[in-house]
Length: 279
Image 1 (spheres, rainbow, N blue to C red):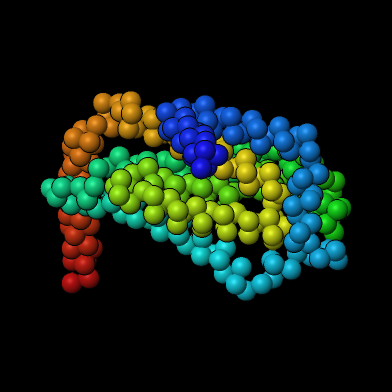
Image 2: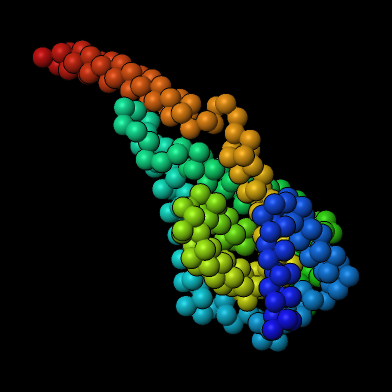
């Protein structure tokens, strides 16, 4: 009993530390994971070997179920982003109607997607770091050398292995936990956590990413999410105050309506003038 109580106490302290100092916790995670794979680079090879058939192929990548799961994840990313855009566009289209929710929420969701999986992971790391994917290396049937973590090379020109784009996009779904009602957070986090695990493991099983690519993409993306959350919700600037956002979207919607109304009138007059020429 004492040992169980001690373990629970340690777990509670870790959870409490992560909640109180999220930046420090995430940076520590990134440093620890990086150190492990820098010291033991063959861990990446060992993890990928589980899914390799020894004849130049990763069989899971051809399995219809796992391929379907991959595209299911893509649909979820698109739906979450699309619904967030809809909330903002709805307010612009109907400026007199109260916003469907705190407008910081859709801004938080869309901005973290653009900054995290979009710019930091795909535009910066994947296009500039040059790490070959597992299936491209000599170890797993390709013709390129194995490169460890945090080692920039020119063996891959774009859309490379370091870090995982889909691992980043899957962990990005945790933005929903940040903005969900408190009673929903634990079950939502559990469901998203399971989805993150399977979607990320899928990429390793497909030979598309090394284990370290996935683990580091989680940390890098969470760092972006926590940073944006801190900016929008904990040190909310004047423009992002809920009342100010609602007012800004209302003004923007009214401005758009006026512009569209003038454009419609101009089109109607032009059309009438053009048709008169044929009378």
